Length: 253
Image (cartoon, rainbow, N blue to C red; front, side, top):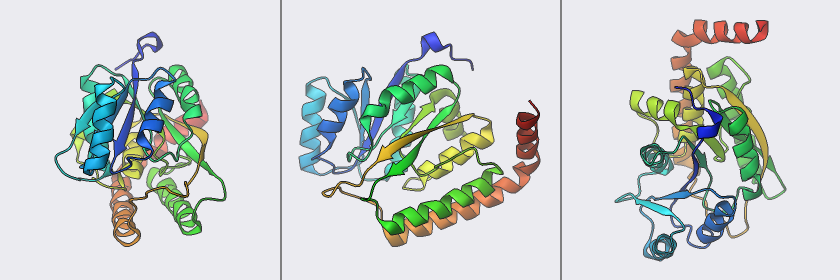
């Protein structure tokens, strides 16, 4: 489905689980760029719910509440579908914990205006606050994704700062279930590329705040990510001829 640039109707989408100290600052920084904000509360505690209620009462956010904690992926799926149903054409995913540079919101929107059918993926540019183990793990995932897509099109499949074209993204959600937790970001990126969605990569500064709250569980989430890569590598095999043909056509153009 074509989306004329003049008809783009983007929103910001923020999943949250207990980030009561940073969510108001993040919402206000995003809204300063003129974006409506959808926040998906993934079963947060009472203090966080109170902050979100105040933001909703002030008209700063559209609030969607999940009845219990289900994971980042489940929250994003619910938010993407809600954004589409609200009439938005694109959704800019951004974390609630202050890691992402909200000053780059206009750059994501400009890239989407120029390429309205593309998924615009943030490519994380870190400072010295990044944990070394997390950084090295990301490089391993990058290599796996390049194998799963038979291309170098996705610079960074783990960055949670990206802009989705909702028509194709929601169609992929309807086609097959997506992971409910931290492995969502990588799998949806790979599956949208398989689907033929173009990818635009945008370098963006990412920090790890000293008082930041991370829900990444080293053992459990790494096991889930390993299982995901196994599944995606197997899924690539029947798609390999089409992926190679598509790459050849791009190179020949």
